[in-house]
Structures are given as structure tokens and as C-alpha cells.
Length: 615
Image 1: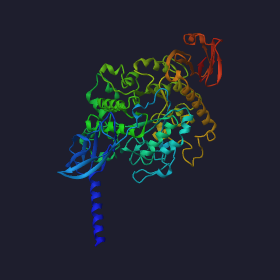
Image 2 (image 1 turned 60 degrees about the horizontal axis):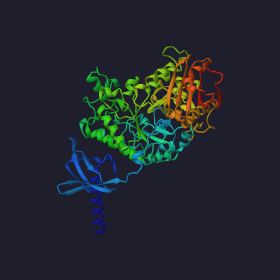
Image 3 (image 1 turned 90 degrees about the vertical axis):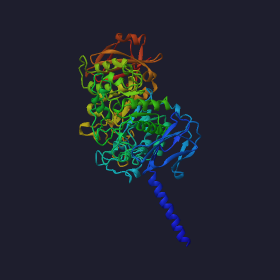
Image 4 (image 1 turned 60 degrees about the vertical axis):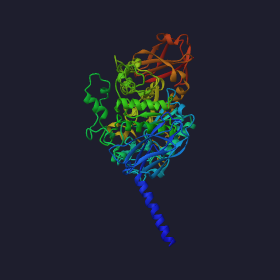
């Protein structure tokens, strides 16, 4: 009899647990913190016919409940202002009977969280594609909860790099002179193919299990901070992947941009500021999908916008990251992405956010930076502190091919680019780069070490926040014309059976070491130089394909000379007297030699550069 009663009791408990699991499938965000600026938290509850129940909260004020045409969702807005840390109960009721009690935790906020300082022009950012960088934990190479498994033989497959691989090589990154890491997205991407890039996310509250866990990500941030390295999180508020769990059960039809169904963007982001645009062209740009497998999110829907705002605040608070990089920033709803940015900056006023503004005109690029004099004409402000300098990247990929100067060729491209700095609200807060995970590899455009050195001299000394793409520092090449996987190859030594290990000096070839030692020298000097990190710029019109500019503060001056011609050139020092003054000599950081200025002229070899600290 007792065995029969025990069996019945266990059966009833199992059925109850099953029904509760069926009733409640997702709670997002999974928790919150006390003393947040964003204190009225909208908790999304998802489960079968969950909207049939009423909602109340024990110990907290329920400000409102929103239900949509989909009965599987409830959006409950809960006031946390003045609340104490602890676990509260969200109650789902049917009449007076409680059907389900959902524990919801408000955690203690780190007292320094709000005042964290984001990445700045004092940093050098090292960009990592985690699946291709280093495999630190082979146990997570494949995972039963996601479709695509390890296949290192497939160029566009999963190769096994992970969070632990980044942690294992933090010393290498720091030694190179980097003070910040930007990893491409780490959240779950459950696409059947090409999921390694992780820009088509399937769960935005969960690290992809092939990279590790949420706690592993927090551990990466903690380990990086211990070595004075900041961490930048790559986020994608514009779109999700077509395998996102919500895509199969949309809270509302307008959660996505639908025309109805799929319509690809025209990629004409200039329609966002064009006073003569067609409204249809603007709509297709901002509401169209990148590709069919990336559903476009509708930030003009308040539920969607608030969901995205809370998601990114949650990750910043949970992980302790120092800032955000925003993918496809200019394809979002203009008003929505401005509010998204503003809310995050209100929560973390000293952090930094850089947007991918892939445009080829400085006025268009400037439009997207906070307090831009260009966007002010249209009474619009993105609140976005930083943009990516694609116009400088455009010039880098052409200039070093042009060994004759011409009116707008060779190093004149750089001079003309910086002439337009007056268009920006803050030139120090612009991310500058020679390549990234979406562009042609620099060392494929320029197979010569000399040209690479010229590019690194430029990136390491001009205004802005320099970014280096992983592997560039060892001469890694790759042809984008062969597909994206070719510009995202595995870093040699990141896998235990690799024949060579370029993470160590002993494991690098002579050629790899030449690239590495030059890169290390430039960026470690920059780390020490206030003039390069924070100074003003004075540039001279190039002559004979030689570009000369100065970075300076009240107490420090650095003279930079880039000779893009094959021939040795002579620079008359009289021309630079307004900056040189009575300086008698300087120290060239690259050759580690003293430069005598008393001769009134300076010889510089073909395809070479000087970084001269003025004494």
C-alpha cells in the first residue's frame, strides 16, 4: 500500500513539474539588479497559453501587463526602484488560485559598475574571431544542444576556438601592446552552416556552448581586467538568426519587419540622411533584411526596443564588459537605435559604444557620431560616442599601391582624409583600422613587409582608437574573393596539434617574427606616449609621396614621417620649423637611433617610416 501511495505521489509531482515546464519556457531577462537607472523592468514570460493567466508580484509593484495577439506571451513591467536585493515571486493566477510561482531575483549591484570606464584613444583594440583564434577546451568543440559540429577541414565550419582559448593567450595579447579585446559575437548561433561567425544569434541570453558558458565569459572579463585589458562585447540589435527560438513563435507579427515576409535591404544607408530620398528607399534600407537567414528586428515596436535595451544592459551588468561594438548600426530604425544607445549610456555614462558605420564619405560617417555637427542640421542625435573609420580604411587599401603621389594619390589620400576631421564631434573617439573580419586581409593587399610597416606606423600614430585584426601581426593573409572563411583562418598554434605555434617567439618563422616585432614596437611605444594617445595633430601637405605630421601635447611632441615612394627622399627640416622650433635632435623609436636635426635635412629610405620622439 505504501509503495502504491509513493508511486502515485511521485507521478503527481512529475506531472506537475511537466505542466509547469510546459507553462513557462522562458523568463527574460532572467534576473535584474537593484539601484539601476533602468529600474522599471519589463519581464517577458513565454509559455503555452500563458496569457490566459493574470499576473501579480509579491513584494514589488506591478506597473502594468502587456499581452499581444500571441497567447504564449506576457510582458510584465515591475518597479524595482527602492527595492532590496532578494528573490521575489511573480505569480500566475487563474481566478484566486495561484497556478505558478516564478522566483525572480534582484541582485546586489557592483558599486563600481556604473562608473566603469570604456575603451578610449588610450587603448589599442585587438580584434578576435574566437572560433579561429585558439581552442582552449576541446570538450566543448561540439555540443548536443546545437546543430553544427566541429569540422576543422571545412573552411566555413566550426573549428573549435573558444573563450578559454582567449583566456590562455591574454599574456600574448598584452605583450603585443593591446589594452582591449573586441571579440566577434559569442552568443548562441544555431544555424546549420556557417554558424562560426555568430552574427545570426538564436538565443541572446546565452553564450554559444561551443565557446563556453555565460560564467566563462564573465571569467574572461575578470582575467582580462587582472592584466589591465578591457573587453568589448559585439552586439547585434538589428537582426537575429532565423533559428532564434522566438522566430518560431513570434510575440507579435510586428516583432520583425515584414513586407509581408522577406525583403532584402538595399544597403543604401545614405537614405538615412538624404533630404531628397524616396521614403520607400529609406524603408527598404532600414527595414529590409540583410539576408534571408537574418530576420530584421523592428525597433519601432516598443516591446522589441525595450527587450533589446534590457538585454544589452543585462550583459554589461552580468559580465562587467567595458563597452560595446554594434554590428550594422546604420541599418537599424533611426529613432529606435538612438534611444537604445541613449539608455545604455545613461546606465553606464563613462563607457563607450562604437557603431559599425560602413560608409565611404566623412560627412555620412560623422552623421552617426554623438553631437555631430552634420546630424544637428536635421535635429537628430544618435548618442553614439564612437564610429568606425571606414573612410581611412578605404585610403589605406589604395595608398601604398601608388608610389607616385599625384594630386589625390599615394599619401595625399591620408592628408585629405584628415582635412575632413572638422566634420566630427570627437576625432579621438573614432575606431581606426587597416582591416577587420569583413574586409580584405591587409597582408593580401600588400604582401610586402615594408607596406605593412607603413600601415602600422599610420594606425599606431594618428588620432583615434587603433584596432588590430588577429594574425595581422604575424603576416597572416587571406583572400576575401575566396569567401569570408579565407580572411578568418586559424591562428597557428591555437590548436594543440598545430605544427607551428606563432604565440611564442620560438614558434614563429623569421618572417612572422619580423611582422610581430615591428607591431609590438609601434603599439607598446604608443601605450607610453601621451602625444599619440591624446595629442593634437598638425600635418603638412605631402611632397614626393612623403607624409609628415606631428602629434603633440603641451609637454610632448612626436614627428612621424612615412615615405611611400620606392626611392630615398630628403626632407628639408626648415619646412617644419613651426613644430620643431629649437629642437636639436630626436629619438627614432623604430630604429632606436638618435636623429641629428642640426644638418637641416633628413634622409628617409624608400618605403620606410620614422616615429621620432622630439627631445
